[in-house]
Structure formats: C-alpha cells, structure tokens
Length: 439
Ligand SMILES: [Zn+2]
Image 1 (cartoon, rainbow, N blue to C red):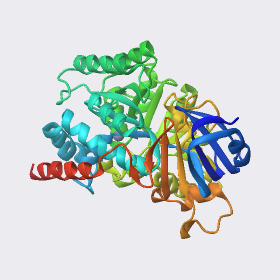
Image 2: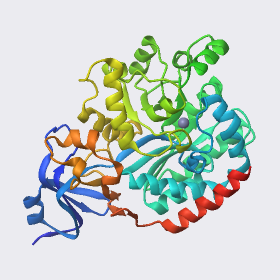
Image 3: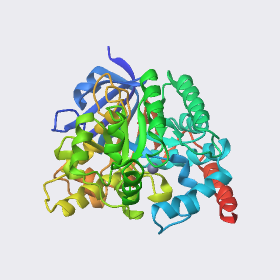
Image 4: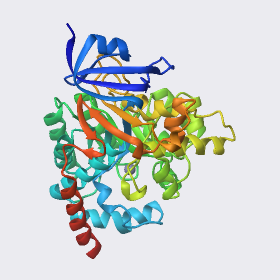
C-alpha cells in the first residue's frame, strides 16, 4: 500500500541546498499538508507514495524558494515615479511626500497584492518587509499564500502611520502579539535607520525583540552621507555607533552595509549580524558597492534583498543573485569569488537563516515546510546543460519559474498566481497611479 501525499514534485535536478553539494538527479519530493515528507530518487518516491497531484518531471529543476531579505513591498506603486536621483533627494523630495499623501490600509493592501504577484512569479516564497500598515500587508500576503516577515517601521518623527515614537512602538508591539502564532506571517520590529532613530529608540526595539523573540530589521551604512552624518552626530561611523550602544547581535538583519570599514566588518562578524545586500538599489541610487567579498571572507552572513521597487525597479532575487555574482568578481579582480553555489545559498538557505527561519525553510529536506520552485529548463538560453548551479545563477531568468509552492500549496501555476485576481490587481494599480501622477 502506497502512502497518500498531497503533491509529488519531480525534477531532473533537485538542488536541496543542504550540505550535500551534488544535486539529486531524476529526483522527487513528497509533500503532505504544509511539509516535505521525503526527498529522494524519483523511482523510490513514486514506489512509496501516491500523490494527489504530480508536478514537474524531466526538464525541470526544483530549488528552495528564493528569499528576499529586504523590501518595502507596497512601494511597488512608486515604481518609476522618481528615477535618477540620489537617495536623500529621492526620499525627501519624492517618496516621503507621496507616502504622506496616499499611505493607508487601502493603499498598502492593494500595492502589496501587486508585490506578492510579482514576487511569486519570480520564485520568491519568503520576504522580509519593513513598512507601515502591516495589518493590510499581512492580509494581502496571506491571500496570495506567501510567507513573510513583517516589521512595523519605527521612526523618531511623525508620519501618517504614527505621530510619536511611542505610538510606533505601541502599534509594533500590538502587531507582534497578534501575529505570533500565524502560519505564514512572522512579526518583527523595524527601526528604520541610525539617522532616523536615536540609540534610545534602537534600544527599545532590541528590548521588544528580546521580549517576543523576533528579529530586528534596519537599514545600516547605506550611503556616504549617512556615514558622515552619523559621525558628525555621534562621533562614530554607523556600525560602530550602534555597537557602542550594545545594539548589534544575531537578531539584527542590516540592509545595505555599503560602507563598513574593515573594523566594522569584524564587528558585524563577531556580533553575528546578517546583511541584506541590495545591489541593484545601491547601484541605481549610486550609493556604492558593498564589500561583499570581504564580508563573506570574514564569515558574515550575506543574503540578497531587492529593496523597494521604487529604487530597483523590480522585485527579482534571481537578477540580484546573477548581477552580484558577476559584479563582485569584477570588483575584487578574482573570478573565483562568489561561486554559483554560494550565490544560490545566499539567495535561499542563508536568507532563511538571516530571518530566524533556518530550521523551517530555506532548503529541501524532510520535515521542513514545503516552499519550493520549479524552473523550466526547456529553454534555448538553458541549453545545453553541464552544471545546474551555473545555469540557475548565470543563465536562468525569473520568467523560467513555472510553479511555486508555499507551505505545501501551489501558489503559482504556469505563471498564474492561483489565489489572486490578476486583472483586478492591474486595474487597481492603474487607478492608484492616476492619483499619484496628479499629485
Ligand atoms: Zn530599504
């Protein structure tokens, strides 16, 4: 008697991203409820299990879902609104005024649906979000069937989201309490940056993170302006500044880290801080190029983030991974750095670890939650095939993603986001864009 499972996913190559470097060839994954039951050779799996649904087969690669470790999902509605500007002018002259005018539950819900659609299509199953009105985000994400870590943004000045630092904290704590047991949403706390949050605010965020056992999501050392400003205000460069107040530990995920000094890279390594490398955003805003090779050499966990779509301008981890793997070879003058397998680890398993979810997702192994992606290899740009890691990192595109499974459920089926009304998403985005354009 065969054991019944919900889904059997077959792949010519299964990249488990466990310690086993060799892909499972002609393999299969058995999935029941939300979890992976077994991974192995296809013949062994189909002899043992009866799948209600069978997906993939020859010509497919199966990989863990991509993890986007830094984004502001709802900012998709500001995509292309103000390009070709430095970060400070872009934020203060365009993004913050537009947010002040339009942000609210309806905006965030509608925009996050679009962001989820875009990310699912790109094979992203888990993302780390920092924004406001996170209840609305959570609602859209759960509808899409995605997984996300949501950190309510904290600032020391008023916005439409809150008028005092304390009000931001009240909202953040309330959100954490309400989502602590959710299947798909993991709450976090997100002090925005050292130039918008005092050390006292960071301290309060760290205390809250400790109390509820959640991660801390922040921007850090993004631009030279930030380095100068923090040095002027506090007498230390940004990483040293936070560290001097005891505000860095393994709960912290720091986005960007473009300008850490050698000494600061050592601090990040010692404290176990994870980095979200947002290369395309840093390139587009001319913020600089993060010393990723040095950070990796010193065993800092580096992962990939898209940042918001207003500074990228898309939510695509495959393109981040591919660009980063090539760019850091050029920057370091060493083509052996950031190998294809290492880049894929950064985009999957290490991303999950950085968000405190390494024991639940990020690799394909029995017992883990079933978040995985099928890539169609029957494409001219993926032919012939000598090395599957090389293909996924250097040749494949997000348009090759065919099926996406999150928490054991199919959420993308041949390009269709099964839980979302795609026509309605396009309609709403167009309606909002007419308003935003008029501002
Ligand atoms: Zn950001």
